[in-house]
Length: 326
Image 1 (tube, rainbow, N blue to C red):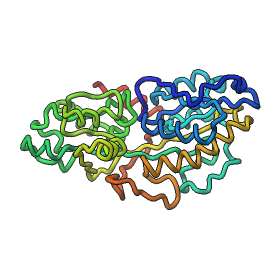
Image 2: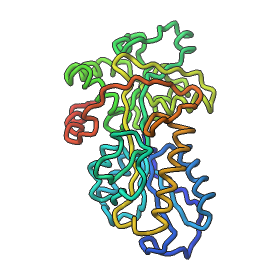
Image 3: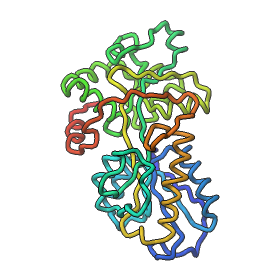
Image 4: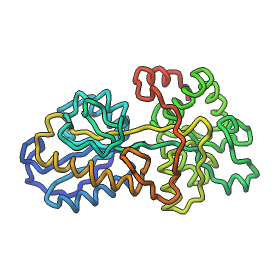
């Protein structure tokens, strides 16, 4: 779900606002793995709310985001983390501040760990994304199951993210391992590989390939497909097979020791209320709040979620990815 390259977006290049780490500093560094259009929206809101603060949003791929925190621990320059996958958040939580003093009552039951070391940022699903018009032009049927994707007529016309580099790809892998068993799932992907044009490095890759007309079917993100439909007027459709939509959640946290700075607490409070609410209203409406609406045009409602048990088990993940050979 993150960008492949690191991009730094400085909201205000103001100097003399205090050295990061000082209790009175108003320089805030935020690591995030949100897509660029979501980050840009946050950037605008933060600039408007805190015109006197020097706030930097640093966009990192999910893997780089987690690796930096694992390597740097509480010595990291980051003050706040946003949109890092829950599995990584769980393994890194010793580096996070206790968030018990913040109001977590708006969140759905079970979304906040008892430790309250991190809070939910979003839930996002995957879908089988198709271009119905191009399928019709090629005289190809709309697939109705994962097995249908093995049809040789689709050879070179399907794109999927690589589980080794993409959380999106990994969640598709886990959903089928849970549904069918490990051996059957890997046998399936061996067959599917015959029809794959490219195993992309990022979760957005399959939808990008659909936009470019390179493929007609992509195992991609619901959010990314909806964004393409709404902002680019791309005629895409989304299908959820009987195994359900694979999904993952992400979280947000404050690095331990940074919670004593008033500016960090102020920005985090704004992030967990205004930034989070607007992100759900505009981009990713899948439920993390109680009574959360979904008013985004073309965003699927009542998504049937797959069994994602064990998706955050890091030992299991290492074993499954060791077996993945593409």
